[in-house]
Image 1 (tube, rainbow, N blue to C red):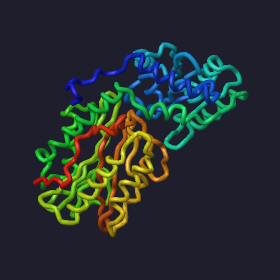
Image 2 (image 1 turned 180 degrees about the horizontal axis):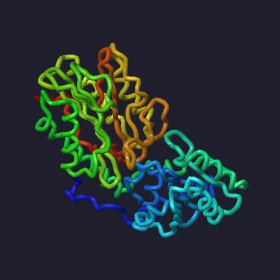
Image 3 (image 1 turned 90 degrees about the vertical axis):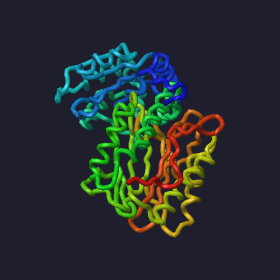
Image 4 (image 1 turned 135 degrees about the vertical axis):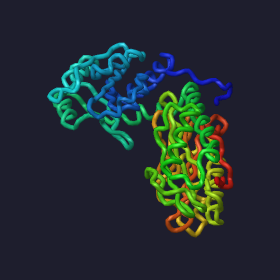
Length: 392
């Protein structure tokens, strides 16, 4: 587990949320934004501590308003009031939802006017990897109900703060990455040839939960003779057979924080092409790790890994990036990609995920999770072996 073998306390002290809000509000003042309107699970969770699986229901909208000073104001369906009151938020406005004719619209407009005036500058995340979790008709009604408002993209105002994890956040991430590493270590004991692919994935999910994960929310991968070509599909009925290559890719959760890495296994034996491909993605990851330092850009890390994979005859995977940020979402910004010039900073938690196409229809993907530190990095996942493990 983490360094002292202690399970991190659940939740955070109120000072953690005060710090987060103050950092975002400082960005708001610099940008001239009067109030931030947040609608998504990740952003609301980040600033309030509101944690529930009820987000899986699309029926109700949820809103959090962050004024330029002071605490956030929650405008939420009444069904969530008790859960929200367990957070540090004390100004909670509710309505009985669902109400298709006015599902919180009037209450939200009135609250926006109260906290920011009749002519506010309202920030809402509008950039890549953001969305508005509210019916478009309601968004239009809200805009019409605030004719004096100016609307602006607030993506960077919260994203720049979320990218840097506090020590308390890192503790949870370190813990869930070790839990996931422990679950992967059991694979040779729980998965074997002759097992149906779906059963193998089920047993691995059970192992993750048994190791201490709250949820194994994301378990995907593939098993196929001599290598796989797709790693995002659900498992099927294929029986693991001699010569198969199995990849398990998982995002486990502890107290709302994710791990995200994969491991590859050969069933019974490994051919030379697969063996070489696994070593190449491991070496590419090693090159990425060696490049890590504060101030280095994501594009530079991407280039370091590509340089290891590109000399091969087969093309490098065109998945678009070779890693990403990690935290209260399975994938966060920044992207380890040629287009992303974001400079790494201490406190960022990222994945390195080189993908290598080593033959037609054959892909090898490898992933590790790590923390950027003042001197370089700290691995959060237990490093995979360079040679692909064999299960029987």
